[in-house]
Image: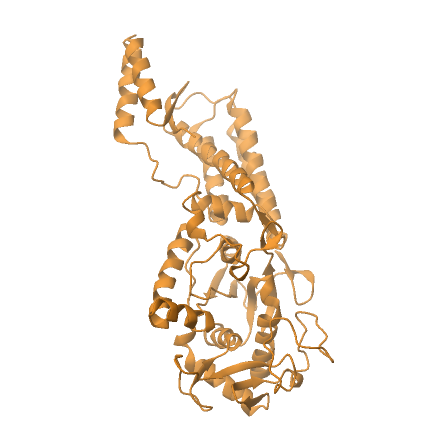
Length: 467
């Protein structure tokens, strides 16, 4: 497999430090509100990367943190008149509701910043001992000028550069790009004891400390959105490599933005859609399918029309799998296509899927392989019959490959066929056999009235929810 490494700006062969084992760290949410579709993209992308590595037989140690203390958490807790801890607990529970809906696997570890204070303080102490820090009135700072490789990820030249975007201005800082490691306590804010006085950690040091605690000095893959390249990931590199004197991350991977009217989706811009709200209009599976239809490094433009198109595309796959499952439940007929021919088609599909995924996690090409299988098998089913063995092989490869993408076309939904609808369908079949067509027609109309479509096939009556 090859991944685009943002550190080198090239697509590189992916190899772990230890054969068959990968260490992955992904920046998680700041837990002050429900997460929006833009936040969901990295969660889905790196979950898919993890799934594919596991599919290839690797062991994956996967860490995704929760930032449960920062300005946003503090301000929101004050608005709600609750503690930061109460807010964090509530929002982490809501995160898992949406993440489970999107079929995002639980991380091996979900550390919280507030649970890692000793690790954070220890790392700052090491940086202090090595001469990388200085103290101002508002906190302890990292001096970027003392780290020779500062800017190697973002490729920025800081020589003589004015105040950087997203870096808070402080006239007393030695360099405009210097960043805070420990913020001194302010009135009404939570605080922890430290050698420098009561306070709380800066955002960047949290991830470095959690990386070291759970993954060691060097991580195989670190993922996040493109907006984290600078300053967050740049600062992570500086403080981690300054403290540990080892390569921090071997492969830096960043996903593109989700845009609304070609502008980045962001809460600060007010142009965001929460996953929770969208899930009331579209199944979670459609939202995940929508995200993975595009290459992860490319921007996605969000529109209702594109989500509708994604829903229709996903329904095609669902109907295909449902039809195969239905046929497997019917009496087996004489096959008119050799099993070997279908086995070859399944193998070609698997190879095309893996070629796409091996090429920088190209899920768009992976889906193209699945849709090609759907198209070819549907065409064959129009004039031929398959053995149950062949049907099972086609269904199994479909389910296997989609599972790598975190999708299940046969997942049970609230729209399972109710028992009374099944009973009416059975009575209709009996009425048709008795040539009581008037009764059969009445039952058909009643089933349709209740929102179900009735299709009489050569293999029996099939019921599907009306669109």
